[in-house]
Length: 75
Image 1 (cartoon, rainbow, N blue to C red):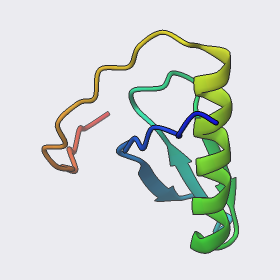
Image 2: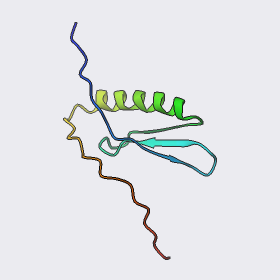
Image 3: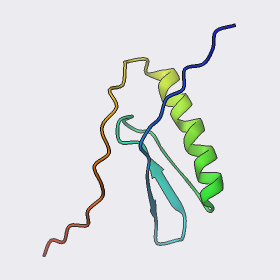
Image 4: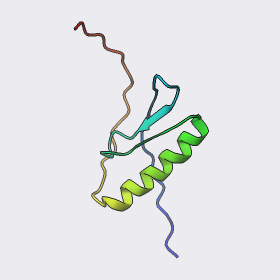
């Protein structure tokens, strides 16, 4: 049996206007999910990451996390 490779991904978590937590993985295009609780969100984003990696086997170059910054613009 082949041992699974452990990988880490940066996940961006936000909360929408209806109170749902929304998670996305910047290095995996289209990899996102939502849930009412953070515990369920983490479970779902792990599943989403697994599925994204299964579908697209292109090697993923991890990005170094630098931080999050709010930016204000006038419209």
